[in-house]
Image (cartoon, rainbow, N blue to C red):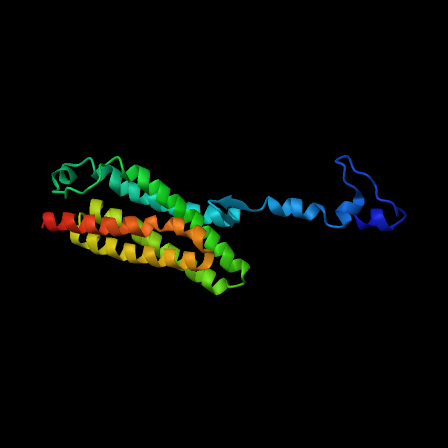
Length: 205
């Protein structure tokens, strides 16, 4: 491109879109390309490739957990379980969890991107590892409760998930500030799930 400007063409050459070769040589084209490489989720700018990874991990977790949950809730075993009065209607869970998984994916991607942008790759890797651990705990709970029917173990695992979720959210807020606070419903819901799971275990000892 520089050859058009400096080699025999001192005057800018007009282009069909209204710009000139001088505009291109000066880098006017660059920002137009750069802007499309980021998206924004709830005020959190992030790279699509990072979002694709965190979203894929979150919704793979949902799919794995769903394979254990779906068949189990139709069984006589689940129907006969004594449940506390504060258990939400079954219609609530398919609404809440997709929203939480969406928040997990968006906030986690933005946090990882921010750490990478700061050059803090070690913390970015650590956050990614903690996210992976959190999702393993998340998906494992459904299998332990619904498939293995280990109510006590599931209650303990729910508590570990609540602690992990709170730590993940705290780290995200420390990096991204106020926009990352949209993730706080995740540990709050996990805390509620711990209480619920523990009560079901107690009622069915």
